[in-house]
Image (tube, rainbow, N blue to C red; front, side):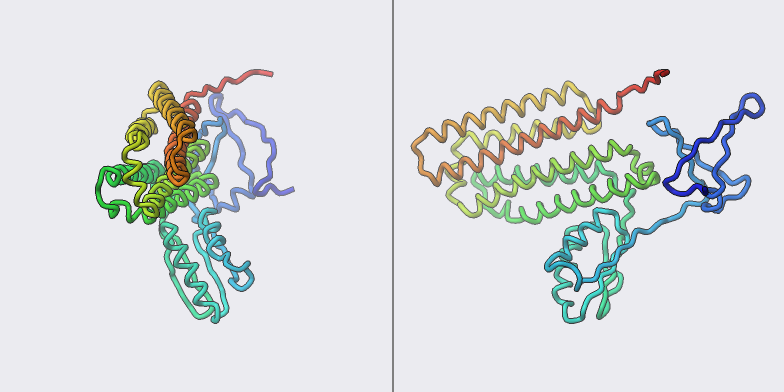
Length: 349
């Protein structure tokens, strides 16, 4: 039976010349890659112990394409389908539609373009629209996107403190835009990781193993969750201006700079991966969580108004969740550190 993609077989190693070992390649694979005698092959010794063989001079660019019929999709679901295609690694998206539905379709497409990075409209006709990604998955280092997400989260929290200190609410007026930026970076990282899992070329360019890439995606999700809670705080401040003056007198605001310092320590350890510093930061975050829980228990036993209690509890919970996701962030860093230190010992059965 011919050998094809997904198939496997056992081949024997041959000794030639006393010091050289050779292994014959499957003929269907050689023909499929249009190889000739004396062509060069790249051999990679993977961390798993496996060898990966790829043609050196015959790199084939495989484009991922997907086609949607707007009229056949569930109502108001085009944006979700476009995002699914984006995260799954699609390079080209075509959407066909009835001319009567063009206005509704354009709204979903514009929303999709705002939520993603790299996609552009290449052709827009009366019955179809074509989108193509112009950003190579290996061009944007994952740590650069993570750092950008971190800066957006911490800058918003700094501006929240500034408003509590008496500055104008204009400092947090663009909170929604910053949250959207963090969401877009999360989608980009998830897309890159999805492509990396299928492409050794992207993995090589990003200098990450599959397991490391998955952990980077987990780090990005933690930062995105933190931004959600930072945005929730700004919403409460905008909807209840009196909250700003009242909350500035509590110990809750003092917890934010402490959280920022501990998260900064964890961000530094994306590269250094010092387990002592990571565990110390996680310990301080745990203590901060306990302090906030104690504050909430005392608040529930107080005689303040229900409105005040509801606002205070919501604010405290958001800061506590920031600490919780930061501790998760530190745990993922430990996973990354330990995975790089793992030793493989072969045992003879």
